[in-house]
Length: 347
Image (tube, rainbow, N blue to C red; front, side, top):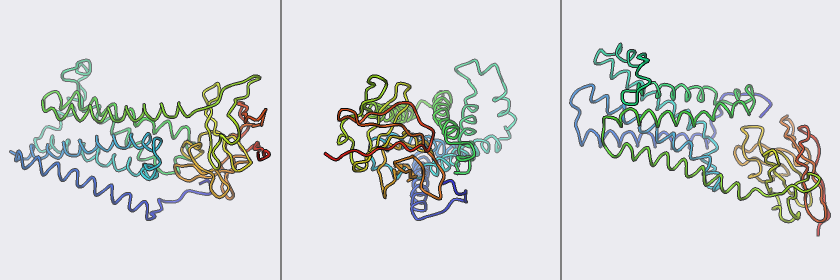
């Protein structure tokens, strides 16, 4: 956490995760190439390289789709949380596959002695105002640059250096990269290859990502409770309506989500954003007396939102009270690390 930054520590879970990921990529690309060469043997060297371009391109698109699906899947079911823990590894691997896709494309131009033509394509500015003939390769290169920035800043050093909100904003650019890839395919190969598999790939991939995000958003909206009552406190419900060792999430008038936790007869309210990667703290549990983020296990004390020593992270807390048998939360945030938890008499 905040003690210091070290090189990536390869524990068993990371090794298994990466081994499965590597095996999946090899199997996907190997199967794609085997089927492609079996159905249509390559006519020449450029045609052979083109098969590799397609294989790595389709694989990169599939990996991007999976990366963007992991978040909402983990929100919908905790069974998918293991996929989330090392999602950054998945992202770095996606960049590598996409970079190889671009590398084969450059090689395709190179074996034909047409590298100058690639520069002409990218720098013919009038073509950027056209639909048919749009320099679609520029969209792919832009997406690759975004993936590079994300891969280069994936280590916790950059998370701490940039601060979680800035780091999170940078990595949200993955959605921009995905949109650029969709346009790259739609304005590129789909214009001259009339195979129905290409639009089907785009439709299914984009549809899965969209549907999962809508489903996760609707579920979170439905689970969010609380209503503002005079003179501004938010009613959460009776103490027993908050699951023991768990939380209910309420939304303040300004849209801020507040996690209200109960540990036996103690209740505290903190921001729903973990200090690590802005993970959904309210979806976690109290383990060993500390609120534990479901994403990467970062922990905070219920009474003041502080990480246990020797760590130094502090979360914003909120005042709570028991009023007429109901737990209520003051939506005005307190400075990070301010003690605010209360105890109540057991029924």
